[in-house]
Length: 424
Image 1 (tube, rainbow, N blue to C red):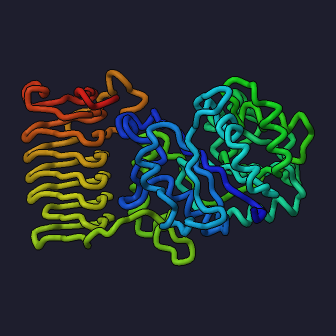
Image 2: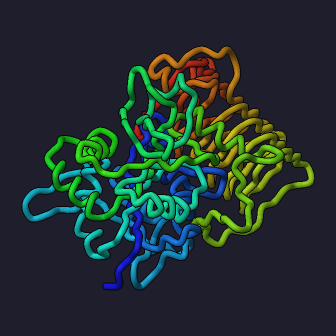
Image 3: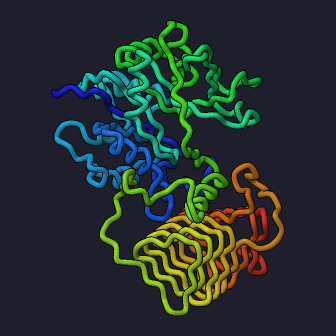
């Protein structure tokens, strides 16, 4: 087989449990973003825009939607005879069969796939960040430094540094220390979970560390390479990068797309974001409608008012309904005379007439205050909300609900309503 200089391995198996009901039935990289995209479109598009045409996508949790979305990679121009995109779920092997237990274990289980290309370099990526990055520039840096391992890193506020893998570097950007989530960080340069390895170095580290339980890059592979005195460098990145791992950061990143001059621009000619869009009709905005500072995707029908919101493909917003500061994912339908304030509504949700979302006091969620916060209303996919109910802040709803589920037609702030078929 023709040799590839660099192939990419994209880790897309994550459950994304901090996104609550949004990821109850779908892997985090397959969650909608910016109306028409899914989160995984960003690293995949970065690959194509960077000239990386061989990508292994490692899936695990709820992979169906992700697999269907990626297909044979046509939207990203990754339908190649040699290379292209390959979906790599865990599979049964003759000796033992096991799930991917950690980021490095997942890559280790696909040694054969990588070996078949015998690349010079392997690029390791995560499927759940929103950013634009030219991996070719990072590879040039890697070669110039004659590095064994290059870690993409970016400065973070010092008070947040203990949430990340932190690198300490000298004046030449060579890594002199690596600390995984340190209590007292010595630097604020955080690993972005994007690595370039020389293939023999990666292969050796994966084989040596294969018996580690839940073998992970940050905890095992990087420290091992460090112990082996490999040449390790930090490639400093200064562009937009967002880990959309919480409902708050997910909501913020979507809202930032609507800014007058968005920090993250989806409209740049030279760095397109590709997706599997399907043949949707154009949007329809009725005479009675008002749309202000919003993204409205193909196939949406707007009869009410939409302000500062991201409206996905095929969404219908009924007459007299006001939607503010909200994300409504594809194929959801909102009835007439509703008020939707600061909500995240997943795909294929049906909301009746006269419903109010996001009222009342900002009371913390009783069952999962660390997930359902930021004053948001979060509704899981395929949920149904009956007409004339009122729903407070920091709430989560999943499943087909009926009027009798709402005491006095109200779900108060901080409450969670999960019906059969729905999942928290």
